Amino acid sequence: LFNRKVLTTWTGTGSPIYYKKIKNNLVGFNYEILKEDEYDFSTYIPNDPDVIKRINAVFYIPTKASTYSKYLNNNYKKAYKRLNLLKESFNSLNIPVYDLTEEMVNYVPRYLLKDEYLFWRDDSHWNKNGIFVAMKFISEKLNLSNE
Image 1 (cartoon, one colour):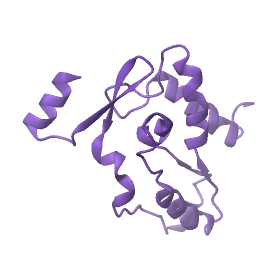
Image 2: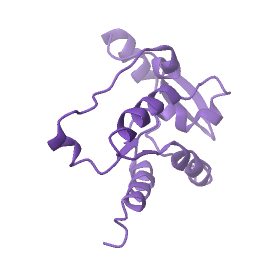
Image 3: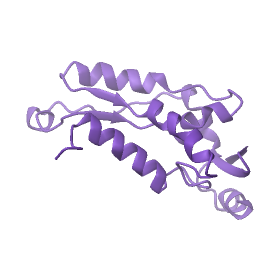
Image 4: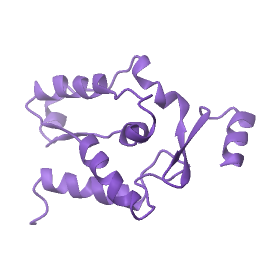
């Protein structure tokens, strides 16, 4: 973790890393992500009918900070603006939007009991546990579990 913090600063890549102890381990969070509700954002919403007819659903993927917000001393504000933007845009196209946040948050304590996490401790990407939780949720929403 020390090397990552030093290299990020030295190379000027990425944002500073904020470390929080969760369970017995230090877990790194992108400092800018912790303040994400302060930033304007946009997303691409397709308007091509050929593209739209191929979209069965949209899934909102929570950040590591929102997934572990309970363990961040309530310093993190969830990014409801982003989810609402997706819902407003895609619901008007009759495309459902599903939020993975609650599902991910509900699994955090289960994995912490085993001293495991849903994201890599020093990275913002899912590890195998996070992938499993997300894919289980997605397959249930798309009714793929019986195919």
